[in-house]
Image 1 (cartoon, helix red, strand yellow):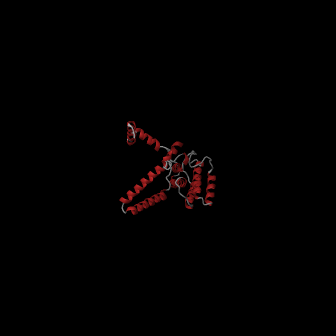
Image 2 (cartoon, rainbow, N blue to C red):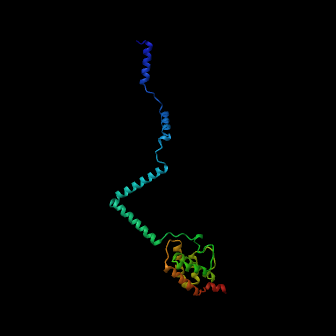
Image 3 (cartoon, rainbow, N blue to C red):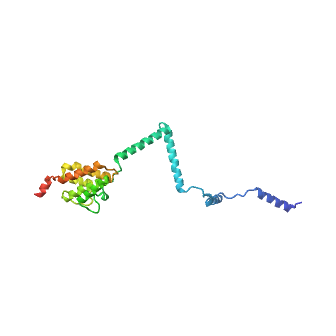
Amino acid sequence: MLGTGGVTAALLIRTSDDVPVDTPRIPAREAAERELSRPMYHENEPNLLQRALNRFWEWVDSLFGTVAGGGPGGMIGLIAIILVVVALAAALWWRLGKPQRAPGAADSLFDDSPRSASAHRTAAEAHAAAERWNQAVQERMRAIVRSLEERTLLDARPGRTADEAAAEAGHSLPDHADELRAAARAFDDVTYGGRTADRRAYERLRDLDLNLERAKPQVTSAAWGAAE
């Protein structure tokens, strides 16, 4: 049989068991955040790059879903549009070639080891014999310009481009101005434009080179004034 003190103690114990411990809200949240920040809870989560890729592919998937649902013909219409775009891009690439760069120091007609016109012609013929038409066209254009420099129809200026040489030579050789521009364009196409030359392209430059050897420069009125 319990005495008064025992009953009182029992009641206190029962009361403490029934009433939950009321932990303050902010410390509890901080304790939970500390617990969840432990590495063991994040071992299988994707890294930053994987999360970015997942977001990107989710965006692509939603974009295609929107276009396929709203475009004419649904997914079939979308595929048709993509094929048309690809075909147009391929046609433009075939027609225009690679984008040409703006003229600069790297676009100089000659390299750092100057050679004579005869040496460039020999190199051009060797490339042509091996059917390396791109290199043959390049060397023949260099032979043309070097020959004009040797004849003092052009001043020997480092860094000159094929277009500049053709434009300057056209002033003293106006009957061949169009052919000179075409030769410079052929040189640029194979050197910077990603085009492929052929035998006919090379033979046009070779014929131009031979014709220029026999061509007489035209003396302009400005030259007459300077001479007087």
